[in-house]
Amino acid sequence: KAGVTQTPRYLIKTRGQQVTLSCSPISGHRSVSWYQQTPGQGLQFLFEYFSETQRNKGNFPGRFSGRQFSNSRSEMNVSTLELGDSALYLCASSLVPAGAGETQYFGPGTRLLVL
Amino acid sequence: QKEVEQNSGPLSVPEGAIASLNCTYSDRVSQSFFWYRQYSGKSPELIMSIYSNGDKEDGRFTAQLNKASQYVSLLIRDSQPSDSATYLCAVRGNTPLVFGKGTRLSVIA
Image (tube, rainbow over all chains, first blue to last red; front, side, top):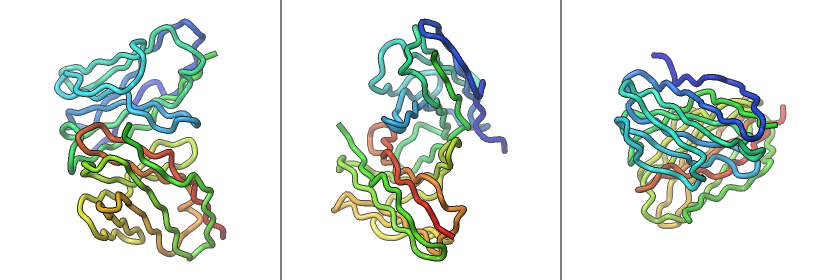
């Protein structure tokens, strides 16, 4: 069974631009979560989607948004990029919304560099 | 603010020794506990999950959970140089997964 896939793997943008990242979960998984990882802050939760609905949102500004499609694929968008948005963006999938007993599996990540 | 605390390390152990990684968490209603391994430049990879007090063993890895003390640990027996990585503790209750910042483990050959 194929794992979580993320595209693109690497991205370079300049300040003020916007970016869209894509995530395809493991086949059969309907829940997708997004995380931002930086050396200083570690892994921080962005949002979680299940059945095209956002279930949870982390403490990030409104410039960060996401959506999920009927085939469970998910996208996240960051508008008006700032230097501090440079990070590894990780997508994780699970069968159902992650709760007691539910395991998330991570994709390879998209490394975003904002110049 | 729900927190997960880990010693950042680096934790250096000789090859063949036992590596002990520790994690404490603040949210008493936490129900699920995970250990992920992350190699430099790679994404986190699930090693162990544990949900009940006590020990859970899987090969060279043993996870230990003490909910009363809000403490979870990971023991790696017969440590190998290939175990050198950052180990992330993650905790989940009624909120999304909260990660610690990880402990960097270095196994010296």
